[in-house]
Image (cartoon, rainbow, N blue to C red; front, side, top):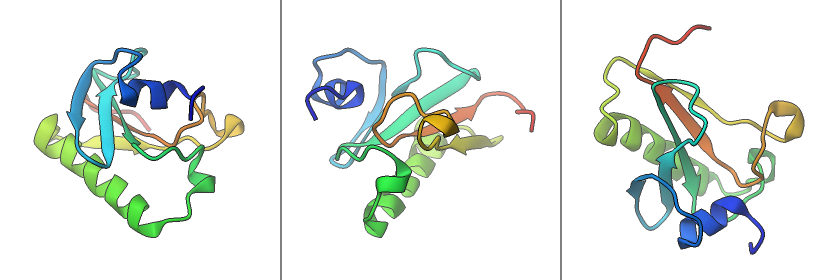
Length: 109
């Protein structure tokens, strides 16, 4: 999608601090971190929100990649939180499905 910030990051026209990439997802550091480790994992296919997702295989793949990035790339052995904000009322600011990985300290409830 031509006006999507995250699509532009995936294509490389907007720079990011990439931590992982494969053929289905792209992961990069959040520019306004809410924890010592704050990484976004986004599918390379443009899907505006979790509410718009229709493919259970893609959603399962996304969650497995989140787990891979958190454990194998970021080494968050002590634990981490995964957050997916849905729509404006749920705090979503960029309308391209993405999962936040937060860690690096004990997180409050």
